[in-house]
Image (cartoon, rainbow, N blue to C red; front, side, top):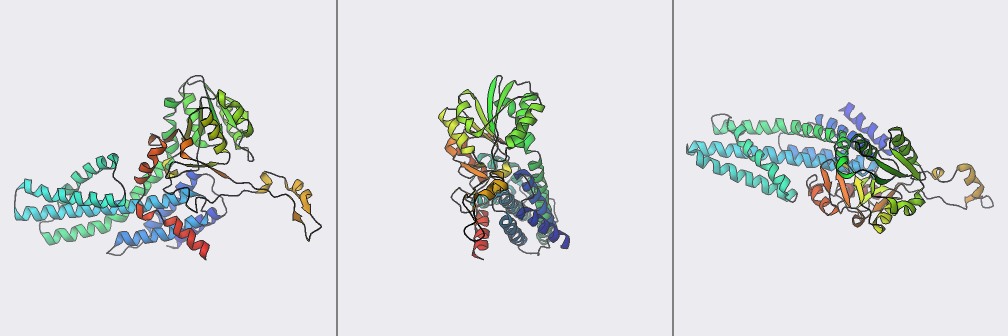
Length: 420
């Protein structure tokens, strides 16, 4: 435990000091820390899932409070909580189905009658799952092989009913944490490969002789455009420089080094060139439950220009950026204010101080927000590692990744921090 606690403390320090750049890196490190934390947890014989959920919620609230603006931290915490609940339901339904099979085989040897308890157990598990999230066609199809495979494993257990109950209980005790860790490993792999999965869809959206507009710098956008270039697509890219950090200039240099026709424009020139653009492709900081987008500052201006000229506005984002919260949540309304030196040099700023009052009060105040909000009606398409989705479908996609009981995690932690 001391090693895990030190790992959590080190990660908390990095979050507070903003030493981790990018939502992808933050999400991956969060999943790795939670995996190490869960692997060292000692769970009681009874109510293992509840104990594990409480422990993850406790450490997750600390991680969220360390940097509330980085929404990917809360997203991963909720994903892990959802994994725990799903694994508990899966193991419980398998155990109940196995006991029902054994009880049916002891009373009568007819195989047809033994199938009925298995179906009822699957129905109970499905009802429990529906209480956590709305059903979708994808989840219903995924549940079919699970329901069919569960009784086969448990039916090969012991000969007596008492021995079977003991074996099932011990199996649940051993498998819960192991299955959760395996699912987190899959989550980490999903985060690591999300850019590649998104880039594979580039050839379906970018065509010859098109003009693409983007703002700032995004590794997802870079991989997406380069993937289209590798598929022999010939197109031109306009890059808005993304003041005041001018990250778009770095993206333009990278695109030019890979052979793409690139033009750098100022942010204020977006309206002037948007009529020549065929598509706007941008990255995102987070995707909200209503389909709105938290993006780098200036993105709403680009989205308005695209809407005015009927240009498709496409957002690229991995599923780890799907946030189950809505824009009206207090923690979502938070914005990161960066250093004023990015806008106004400290040497120039010193000339704007009134030294006639005490030690000198500033005559000019600098406001440098990091993020912008783009409403869903300005977004044409989301491209994630699971495919392309309309903004109206995002709530359903989010419901497949999160449990309703865990949506208030960040709100409670933020409220507790502010009250203290």
